[in-house]
Image (cartoon, rainbow, N blue to C red; front, side):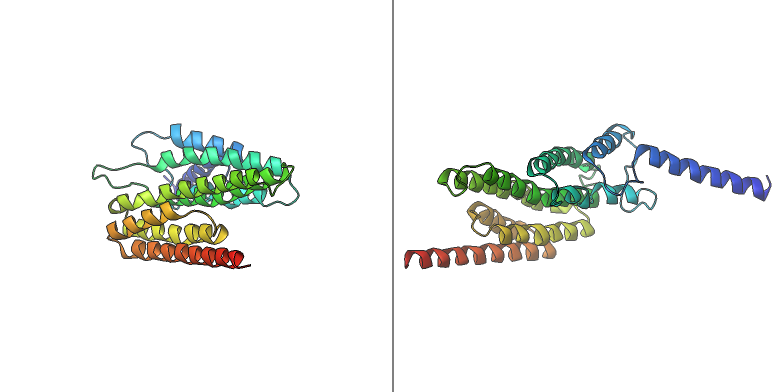
Length: 259
């Protein structure tokens, strides 16, 4: 076979491979919509054989798929758009939230040693969901206030506080993964710890008046249980943030009582 023919065969194979990826995943789009996620999730769930490797960050040929799949800008571009209506953004946020629940199951796979096969990918999807929930509950509470006759009524305040407590409870699910730290690679353990420092501390700073008693108890248990330095450090930082928020809350309460 001549060098020219070999070269043409290689070029043809590359073109066919790229076309296949483009057909299966909308990589040409800057942002993925909910409809795109429906397509991609279906492809990842049913388009691969049981023994076939899913797209990963470590594979140069499929890395872009995961980068797009876990890109928070896909929902932020809509949810932070000041020109869009509140009801519309809440509808979009809810749809993304439902998609995220399906996303987790795709990469939650164990090998024969009970280690996660796709720990980096799974944790990145978890982080996508943690960031999404910040927006989802924030927008939901904004809509409650906007549609209320009296936004400052005790009823409305109780509804909002209830939503915030639900958000805190949802976040606690991520802390359960400390029990699985032995199934993560070292890189996965460090990424897990980064998620606590990035999203949980932000949660406490955003809602300093929320009830974190249950979360603080969970953090104490996980600090005692973890054997990973980076995770212990992240949990300790979270506990400090919670204590600081509680102390500030108590000072504000005393100040109000002394007026």
